[in-house]
Image (tube, rainbow, N blue to C red):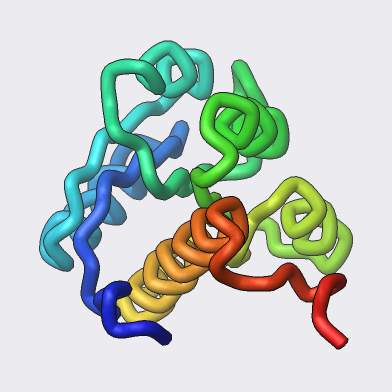
Length: 147
């Protein structure tokens, strides 16, 4: 990874989790890692807050009642194509993991989330964001452009 992309970069995270105690626990872990965290229990509230924050990483439960996590990831990417997403679920299944990746998730985590898994997922999300930005600037070739 180039030197201008720090491995321990701090970022702005939106955490969308309808289960308040679990969401607060996950937010506390993210804050301990040095990230700025905005917590939402409803997807529509998170979407409404997009313009108010410099959102870099979206971490969303896939089972958000008012706006499912897949739709939320799609809306985040439409708002800012450089936003990276991480999917959370308490009912892991191969089919939902594949669907989450199709919607742009860089990781798929089972709840309750382990601190180490969350730390690595946010790092991968930041790396994916950086790569998207570099590709947009023409600094890195997309996989399909490589020999």
